[in-house]
Image (tube, rainbow over all chains, first blue to last red):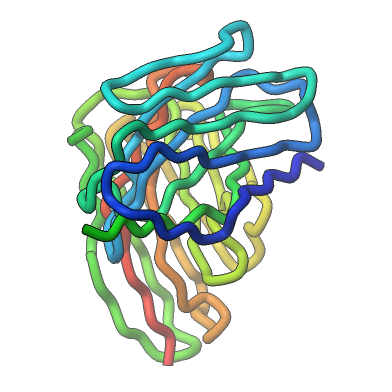
Length: 113
Length: 112
């Protein structure tokens, strides 16, 4: 059974700092990995999707990497801003798929001015 | 935002009553999913659909049923609501199984 772990569970940083969020998964036979952002009381917003054949994806100040063989992904956020404060979730599609996602518990990020 | 509408957005119901949540999409995507989100458990898959009338169980399907009679609508039914089904329910859609997933805004359900 696929299990996804996110470290750290919570992170507080000053504005302007570069930071890294970590995601690990137990079964490396994944189809893809997706990073989401969730604001309090809101739905999930897709940030980046990395296919199993890719090593990284970039969108603006965000860069996600994937090392499938070691079961790890990182989300790098450059020049953090208070507006980046949210919960960040990673999720993998694996197994019999049909696009089903297995989620980590998330990292709660606080960026203070 | 992806064209996903969940209704109702909030509901309070009594134990033992039936409840139906609706997910409506305007994207004509093939795949639709129901997840629940609970503190300490994260998001877990309840049921999913890979086409009209094609549905299957997820990780936490006990006490839930689904139906998809049209591409755009995926209904989640709690036949007899219990307090353990108090949760936030999210609908998600994907055009293909290896494409980006998009989520609705969620339905907060409280069973008293």
